[in-house]
Image (cartoon, rainbow, N blue to C red):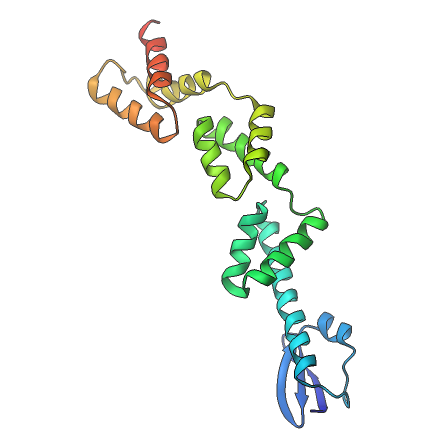
Length: 204
């Protein structure tokens, strides 16, 4: 096939026509890198490489958009790109974002763990689970938790104070006690830890 026309769309993309018929649409960046122009010969292999560059560019744009909204783990970013563009492009793009310094699992894990521990008062076990779900490796999770070194007993006291004591609720009331235990367990705390926290307020 011979490229017979190259036009710019209203959205700014480059429309390529071969043998008088529409072939494909590419962004200006991909088109310039391809070296194609009117009169260029384009076969199936060239078209395949062009489509690969188109998809890589789409994946890159999606990655930039997602990372501009909030930080992501590498696995999390890969999963989101995979849904629309496939695993191959997702992995290549995530690695590129890593090279550019826009993706760092250690920094992400540290920031996310601090939010879970100091703002949401999650237990270490729950934090481990949440980070693992984001694709963070066990070694990185260990490093992050060692760096933060959370005080879980203080966290439980903060939970009980904020949700119950400060609102005038008594943990000696069986109904409120069960609610408190259930809530703390959902955050990952053990029965022993919860009982210690309840006893602290009972003994005041």
